[in-house]
Length: 594
Ligand SMILES: *[C@@H]1O[C@H](CO)[C@@H](O)[C@H](O)[C@H]1NC(C)=O
Ligand SMILES: *[C@@H]1O[C@H](CO)[C@@H](O)[C@H](O)[C@H]1NC(C)=O
Ligand SMILES: *[C@@H]1O[C@H](CO)[C@@H](O)[C@H](O)[C@H]1NC(C)=O
Image 1 (cartoon, rainbow, N blue to C red):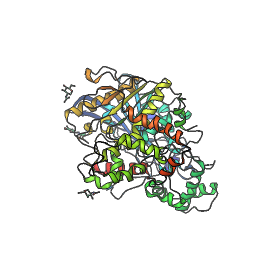
Image 2 (image 1 turned 120 degrees about the vertical axis):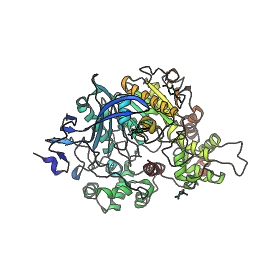
Image 3 (image 1 turned 90 degrees about the horizontal axis):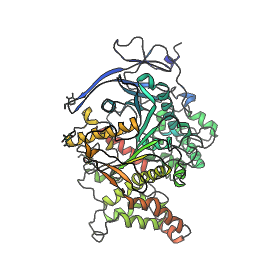
Image 4 (image 1 turned 90 degrees about the vertical axis):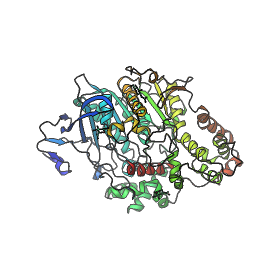
């Protein structure tokens, strides 16, 4: 019975005679074979690529706002030669053309080197984009799989309201996007051997929201046993904004969404039933915190985006922030490699102050700084004037503070980057290491010759690590100078060595200055500086991170009952949806540029 035809999947009656065909639990899939080679690397390898394999039933109709369901078996051979649609997400005017979108988007892609030498380690990529944007298919993993000789799997997962809507009661419990990630990892367990992969050597890796997802999966009992190693690039469960925790607020947001899309005045149950009849794309704009649509609908200023991972008691039994704070991290058998970049805050600055985009050096005046720095503080620092003073003390350049033309751009972007990315990474790395996990830390300081951002001053910005990890040079997406070619090869080696053995140093690379990535311990605090020289260093941004992770929380505890401290902070400007800004800017700029 060809039930699958009814849901619109395309099948080949026959496939190209030389196409690689693999039998997975739901049926056979036919991919393509690519010969990888490039003049700047000695590796030549044949890689089988399978695009757009469904790993769950399409989450349509009654399955909207439900955990992913197992994929029904198909007959014949599934055509896995082309990417399938990406999950519904907002589109921007700036985008000349975007990939096709469909709510039927639970697909993954497999890059499998042909090998005679036993089963290969597996790396599963969880893309970023603030739980609102992105896709697996936009990360071409041919160079990483070929050069590293690993299987790479890239996945889609549900985004925005379709991925994370919840009513705060039993009628819609949220976290479908995280459950999709878990289903994809289960699919890898069940099927990767058929592609030549080793299901006992799975590394999950991700960047930004993908990295936050990786960290969440370290706290989810449902993901236990599905991976052995984890790589987190610029995002942790301890960063501000995630996860959401307030059931009553999510219920108001749910009804706000109903109001926006024509499902007003209903019980939770009726609301969910009604929302299942709404066009998928109608959820895109309300999901985007930068549009303020949900805020307006519920008449409440939201501190966070409306739809994101939620502490539901099941997928996330409790808030990882509490587990970390109380030193109760328990998944210590998982090897961890994690880090952040030197200029994580620059793209937030560019979004906040668009006039800086065309400047050669961004300028922020003293008065602008005074207005904007509280906007970019998160709670608890946001609502404490004592904390504001402490932050200023740390980031303002006091040598130039009396000069009217002092430039505060660096102060602002460093403050943003440390608070959102660098110091949460430090907090989590310390907690995992102290709990007994094996942790490798990195900090990327290299400013790439070709930025993925169309702005000249971004530095070692958020997202710049991607071109090195995925080897964009070998796709000719960026043309790197020789020192960067060496650097990207070394980074791919570190990442794939880690996937193979849990140690980025092995096997020997023959380039001694690149070796010796020491384990991160407290004390010691060793980390690898990702740059041309790849030096091992110790104690990264310890002063800044002591401010965010220790000093401010204790300051707030001590000033809790101080009326003066609180009242002064009430005058600060309204919240800005930082994460929405980040992801929208990232998406706009990146897709336009590359
Ligand atoms: C920056 O320059 C480009 C091209 O010159 C222009 O199209 C764009 O509007 C400018 N952006 C801003 C924010 O001034
Ligand atoms: C990339 O550029 C090199 C020349 O530098 C060329 O030999 C190669 O075929 C190109 N590869 C792709 C995928 O376009
Ligand atoms: C790149 O690495 C090779 C050895 O692998 C070395 O001979 C060469 O000097 C390096 N080039 C640069 C610019 O670092």
